[in-house]
Image (cartoon, rainbow, N blue to C red; front, top):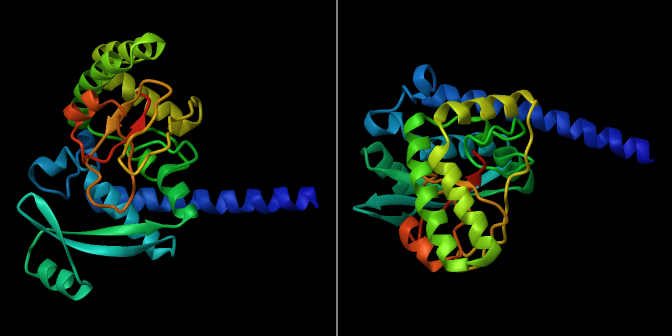
Length: 250
């Protein structure tokens, strides 16, 4: 019986991996990610900062295979998002308005989106779609700066041994390079390097406890998912109280 259960689990895992690989390819093709790690099918700044588009494309793929469903529809008005009906969403989308959808992912869908590591976009974990989409150099540089500021502020807030860990993380962020990130990404994709991603329990207020220094990747838009934030109030003032974040080791 144990052997049969193991075989069934292995079969499910292989099937999941096939879907992840198909989804990753579809996301990259939809965004036109290619030369220079630019999203060539997008316009302007979005060619370099395509996190929200990658997340939306992933959710749409998961919806197409029954692992996600739309929970709410939104239209952007200034800097805010207003909830609208599905009919109004379609009308506004056709009119050229900036619209978005939030999704409810199944447990299987979450595994397929973020992989077994529960990492973020660009982490390199081949078992996830978002983790298999490499980030651009401008995205890397932006998040490196955020990490330096956030971890530095967190080190002042928590103090002691934990503060030392955060300060070391800020120093590592300063000295890291995009080339080094790409090497690690490619190694993880090839299965020659593994490192468990940090996860934490997020409260209703968005506080999360960290156990190691990480780099945060924002720009996931409205996806209906809870992201991680620094527990430190000082750190959150730098990162933005309402900004959803997930993490990966650089």
